[in-house]
Amino acid sequence: MEIFEEEYEYAPENKVLKKYYEINKTESKLYEASKLIDTIFFKTYLFYTDTHFDLNNELDKIIEQNGSDENLVYFLNIFRDLLLYKNYTRLLSLKGKSNE
Image 1 (cartoon, rainbow, N blue to C red):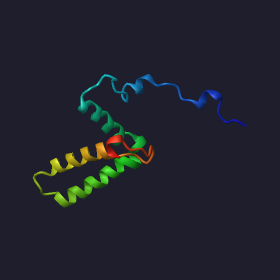
Image 2 (cartoon, one colour; image 1 turned 90 degrees about the horizontal axis):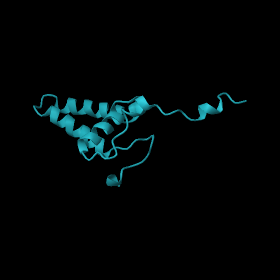
Image 3 (cartoon, rainbow, N blue to C red; image 1 turned 180 degrees about the vertical axis):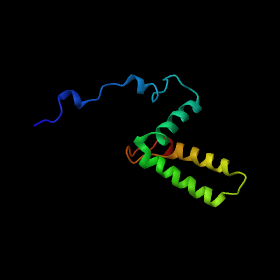
Image 4 (cartoon, one colour; image 1 turned 120 degrees about the horizontal axis):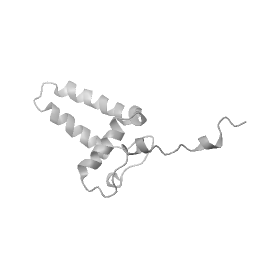
């Protein structure tokens, strides 16, 4: 007995959602690509238990160790950028070519 009809096998394309998670194919600015990756890794429910959770734990440790340091915000931003460029998810289990 099939629970769902065949049409439920594949989700239809969501054009409204797609505009938030698709980068222009001609985009050449690193900042724009970084912004999109940051959103996907750290601001979506898809990776919350993976990358977002790890980020929050590490940021808490940095705050505990450097809470009174005048460069705290700098340390937090550097760590976030490092995680952004070096991280790979357990969901995808893939690394970028620059991380191999």
